[in-house]
Image (cartoon, rainbow, N blue to C red):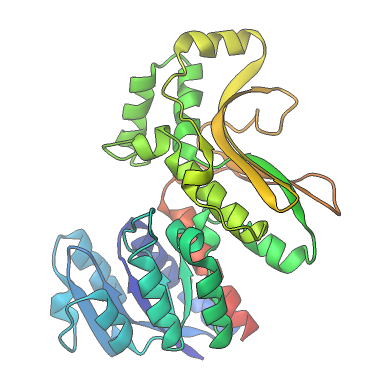
Length: 346
């Protein structure tokens, strides 16, 4: 079966996804009888392209990376993302546009429009989960479509799908983990002798921290991920503002050395516990002993340990290999996996 694909947002992650789809093209056809074409692409600064008969995906990737506009490839005039969704005639949409994490927009509007038109959707935008999970899940079910978001936490690691598919009726009691790779890299490099500023500059040099790193170092990115996990896995709506949050700016080299002397490590620990109908959630620096599963999570390694009412502690760890350090490929794979799993289920 051929699937028509729309890409809303075509930054590093979406382009990595497009390259992955092209690289796996023959395998997808042989294993799943699946072929695909890109019929719509929307960008923030490089224009829009729609062609229900199919765009040349590699040409679009190369044009973006050369700084050119996608308008040259469009078979009809389009001027915004919603028009791309409406005119693409796609079966599946990947939503990766820049998002306001305080509102989840415009990503929620994009997902809503796609679902209304009968598309299934995969997104890496945490805002859609934090601010629109119940609405968008309900809408997807009413249209017999899927709203999936595996890439929103831990990149390509199968976190949400483990609970959705392999742990039915297991109630999540608590979790503790490291969900922000940038702060983990900073603390790991400080442990090896760098200052906070030097470690931040390194993260900026490899593209895992923005020019303004406050979303990472002040714990906002981690708080949004905690809110997403609580909202979905504990079935309790939670906003990032409700997470007790403290970043890592106050961690000094002296504190790092004292921790090493006592065989402990500073980590930005993300945690939540459900007590009755309420959830207590936090993101804050903590001293982690060697006995903790978080102790060995160094550099870009992230992971989370869960406690449920039916099993012992269960951990998922994503340790990224050399050449993929906190980059776009793991996140792109999560989107890719959402698409393949949707196709497999029919």
